[in-house]
Image 1 (cartoon, one colour):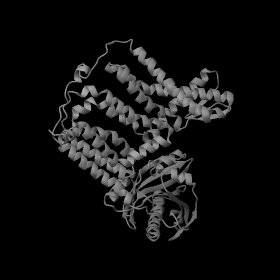
Image 2 (spheres, helix red, strand yellow; image 1 turned 120 degrees about the vertical axis):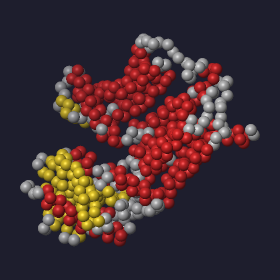
Image 3 (spheres, rainbow, N blue to C red; image 1 turned 90 degrees about the vertical axis):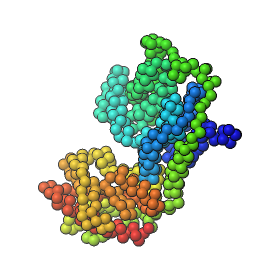
Length: 519
């Protein structure tokens, strides 16, 4: 074998080449991840994760001496599936799919090109990369809400133990002289993920018994919750003594780091305690073989480059689809979506200006809000959220009323789908229908998502539409449309639906004309 063939058959050369191509192909989600590390202090530890993963890979080098590098074609179907999923996430502007797919794809590409056995031996350095991915916001709305409630209760218990009177209601801690609100950033979720990573490292370097390793890793979750409750309790006590300024500024940030170190100290103490429990033996090497003996065993290389070439082709396709969206220009509206007409058909509207910060947080780039009235049918509130560049790696995608309205105090009585017939441009339009109530006041809500020629009531289907537009290089905008009308006392819901159906038909005709003239 000549030098050129030797290099091409070298697994490390193939791995490095695929890594460079992989980063280029998935540059959009990678860029979003790094931006989160840079701008969100809760994820600043992310810069360390790839470095630690490389060190873990280097640490396991001696256990690879007898490894036979052999491609595994059985891994191609799951690899293709996750590639399609990642394309959907990238082109459909869904980082909650494209970002978590990255460590999974790295593992699948490794298994496909170098074999399942290679991945088994390197699962720790490869799997550790999962900690570089920021947590999806859906965890804040589910697990984070639970952690806020638990942390608030623990904080209240600690405050009472210090002899102070306190009342805890949900995530509000009432000290009498002032109130503390446990917000999302203080839920404890910010500690769980990095502490879990530390738990993995601690278990790897200091434990050799399998059940002790697992126990160390999963014990980081209650440790994070307990220490966060301790932080909230101490903040409450200091606030009671020194005032509300203590809960903000330097102490708030410093206490987060201090409690994190306390949590790691608890983990270390737990590890010392586990040392006292049987079994106490310490294993060594891979598969029971002394590591030193493996260093002299030559690596068995495979001359089959089929999987390697297929991987290159797949990454080129992904990169071509992702980077092609850069050539699709944005579609701004002359005068902005805020210039949407306040009069159409028999409807007359009054503008309801929105705070620019609220518009950005809602996931839109521009928005329009107005209250329309019809002498015969009554009034309807309309909101239009507009994205002129639909193909964005944007974590802040459109927020739906199913989340926003309950957060504003509205109780959801019903959520279903509703079909509106004879809608201009779309014939039958299916929307999400909600009936909401607040202190006896009921309202009927319709909302849906819309590109230039596709409409859906489902956000995920809308992302799929965006992905199709990108693949077809069919440039488009993206709209979120919400209409609300009051349900009058003793008014039949069928009559309310008739009013809102009529408004949607009239509004859609005006909207399509507006977009055709202004884009």
